[in-house]
Image (tube, rainbow, N blue to C red; front, side):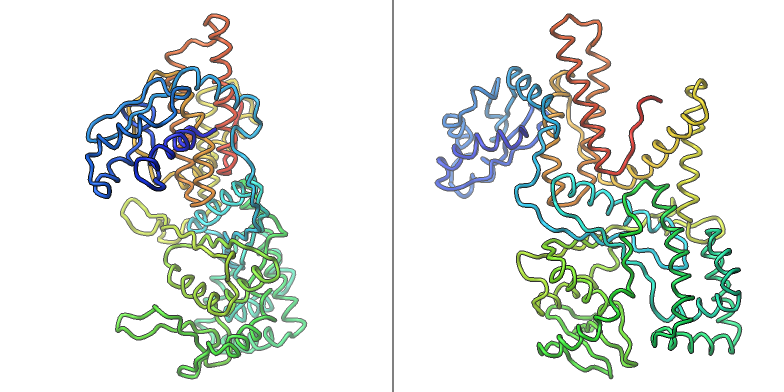
Length: 529
């Protein structure tokens, strides 16, 4: 049982009686007790009474004797609550026999589509792909563990005009040579070589444009060369996912090209619904509430003036397929914050078209960029984007060296395993724990650890709703800190029998909770260092 929920349930009827209607008790951790309720302060103006009087009236009515050792009014009207040792012991014992550590499976499972990672074919993954991949992986791990049906959608950039240039360069090299070059993993070199030829050679540019037409027209040889590009790129992406220890697999790739046959239907349906407006030769939708700097309505261009389709049409086709065909009721798009307005407009158009109707809803799980120490986009010394594989391999190497220096008896295999778990785990944790939680003044170490352990279910429930993984990362940090204080101040094996059993139980619960929490974040644990 989550202690905050337990205390809220006990206080809510008392607050309702005093206030004459439902009230959220606003229970949270306290620096001066185990927990505190702030609701009396919020009610003071509404009821026209001093908050201390309201808090005292609530205490008179609340049933807390079996849960709290003390409950008192403090300061301007806080309710300070200290959990009884017996209640802590009983609740901790209940966790010990619960394989899910007090976190129930959802009673209302949903079909959830999580759209994340989404690298571009024929381009290497760089450090900017880290956040989408890691945050998305944490989301699918958490939602699956809670009992939802989760569909991983790796929306590859595998279509568009640049592919004319890439396919033509591949044809110039020859399929065997191109396949060998791509298999080496240096996709950026292949892309740069194609770009240089396109910029410098007019004949190559013309052939590239013709190749785009052939690709869109379904030319057999062109499609075969395109598939070679896609397949070699996917192999490379899978090696990165394996190194990063995320759960994306080959079956989760679903590129932009998968929706090609649906695009015309999307536009026709929007037209039939009266949502389409011609503008400068393009077919657009103008969702209400979106305006440019000059105050003019902003268009979502679903079909360009040349008859081609852009990202909005593809995103609308994907959204409709996910809600109508897959039956998804929650769509999560793990994409950087610069795309916030784009997705807000796509969601608005989808709602207007009836493709995103309750209970289905969509959310843009945006995130900021990874910056260097100078506050600018993180770059290599050569000024290029930092390659993700290089970053991960360096982290593993540093962690392996550290493991060997601290424990010279480790064999090479053990050091490598620890290096991978710690190096990759450190990168993931640093990415997921960007919002630090506030410190609080510790209680006695044993009680503080027990209170933290009992908070796991509440944190997981909150993160299921918000997908704000810094809250889970922050909780695990607090739990580890509480265990360190407990281990320093509370002898375990040297304690008397009953106390030793109790402390061994706390140690076991801490290990299980940390292991489960880190697993939900996609971070491996090791048995020794």
